[in-house]
Image (cartoon, rainbow, N blue to C red; front, side):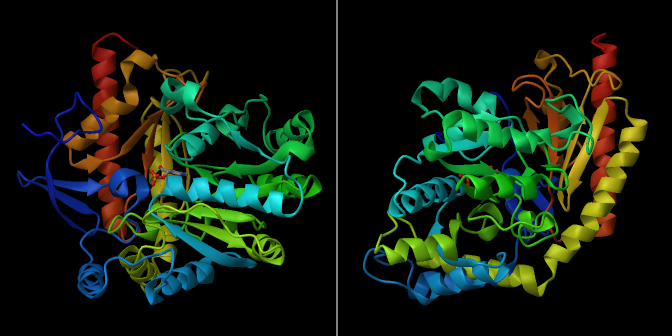
Length: 448
Ligand SMILES: Cc1ncc(COP(=O)(O)O)c(C=O)c1O
């Protein structure tokens, strides 16, 4: 009996005791491939990196906590320098926080403060997309388009305007790329015009959609069109790179896959790689200079902002990522993963689509491949595949709502970026075995 509240109240979860590379070990000695890198694609550098533990212990012994409101530290400066070194050109400042949600909240606030500072106080609305996830604090959740996570809290949320996602497998406009001429990006312009450009502060999007869609990159040209529209109406573009940033997709930041520079970047997860809870807002020089010119202070502080211990860990994690060329490995292993997933799709009739960029991949399940018809929601196919994989020693991350916010099952796959080719093959073999078991189970119950 424990008083600790688990994420899933009905499930009997294993007790994890150790981690090494891509593997986790539970208290009963069972070994799992961590195909989700902790809680949804966090542990980019892999489990059990001793040098990070050593850096953390040394910093904790020296100085674990400092008064951020009236002092600064070398660790915070180092962390910021590392992030700016990895960011697209034109980024100037970093504000360190403790989670991805805080990074999103602060990016929204920085955007708003910039609009006020330059004399456009009416610009307050954020536009985002359906089938997106930006975090669980109320501001970030208001922008999120993940129905199952929003619905219960909807009365608490300030309205954000949602446009359709860039999701070619289930195109909202029933078009095919490239003949579609990127209607999904053009929807941003319609939304801005409907609301009045003078009222719109920012557009926020994940370059590769994680939890809500399962590894869906926007098509080529999408973000270039978004940038053009944002510039036309003086709307800021915020890239939410909390999950897809820092090597995960085989680039420093996922937006590097497009020829576009955002105005703000929210990052998190891989920044501390789970060794310490970290997040940050990266601020472009345009915003920084406009704020400084008007002597405006960034407002948006939390108790653990600029945390000295977290910053020291993040700087060490980012050095480890670069020194071990993990971004390159993510690109290489991601290509192998996608190739393997395509092969599984050929063999398993319940797999409707596979997608991804680098080691941020997804599998979408369907009852009917031709019609792209989802399974009935009550079959809980994604959870069943997760359970079947877990029984076989693989952890994956399930999700729902790809079709309409409710129907549509998918898995997100994102092992630590240290994975080798043989480990990728092992992961794929277990995954296919798990999917096959669920297909048999559903067919046996006469549900297909
Ligand atoms: C794209 C994206 N943004 C924001 C968040 C929120 O991050 P956190 O859970 O660290 O608050 C997440 C978490 O999954 C995410 O995937």
